[in-house]
Image (cartoon, rainbow, N blue to C red):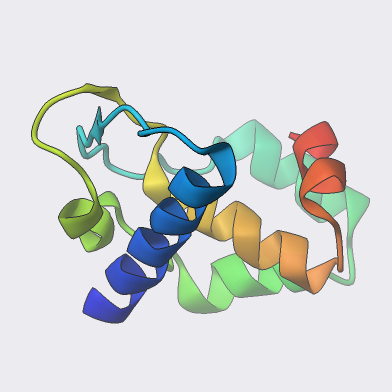
Length: 108
């Protein structure tokens, strides 16, 4: 998972250049990935009886990313960051749907 960490470190360095200022550090407080609530799973299966790619990903791979995979990217101090596993998964879905950053933000 060092490759993932390196990728996000490069993204942070690019942001520093684009923004033109130092980015405040954020810290990681790893959180377990919660199970999908039964009601949510039931609704998703009813809405997509033949399935869809996102249900297949979850069924086949389970949890793809974990907060601990990104620990090298974070400072030991600073305000708590958003959960990196969730942000990574959103990035994958954004790519799959061919959405711009702005479009993906509107969907969150």
